[in-house]
Length: 198
Image 1 (cartoon, helix red, strand yellow):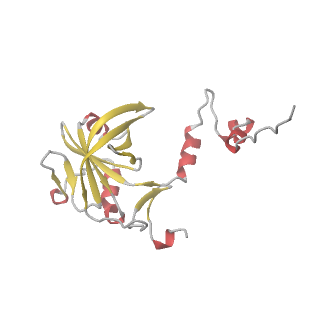
Image 2: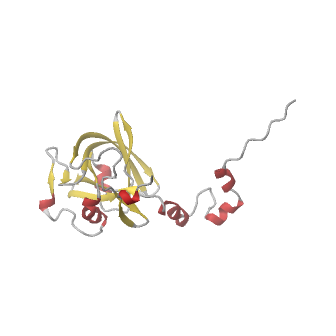
Image 3: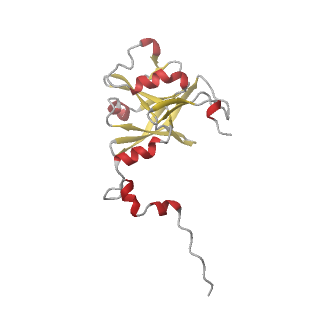
């Protein structure tokens, strides 16, 4: 009988050892909130502002969780924290607008992330689409979407939405950085030729 060598233990399995408790593991198999934040602190994300029309008027929030999940049908997902004042209106809406931002839209990103302000006070910066949703003017691109599913996840709601209409103000050539706006470690960053790895 031929002896076969034992398969190599994947590195991620090796890491999950007795040292896991020192890395923030809690009883029940979850890591601590502090450890989870530290893990994602080094994981950058693109920046978007999501708008909807609520019972009390238009609402908006900034999100770094937007991701495309399918091109046919065209679907995207994002998460909304229950702590956001815009969360009830956005999660209850039938349709929303997802604004995909670049560095030229940094002021809008900051506005959507600031608590206690009227994000629609300047009427010159936004309008309503014929279908009623609020849309900010001049952003790199926006997508009007119909919400197709919602899933409660901890203190957030994960939303899946189908793209119905899109507008691109500033297109990005394949392989070009396009002045992308990135949120990383509690700061806004702009991608450039200097940030590209070759």
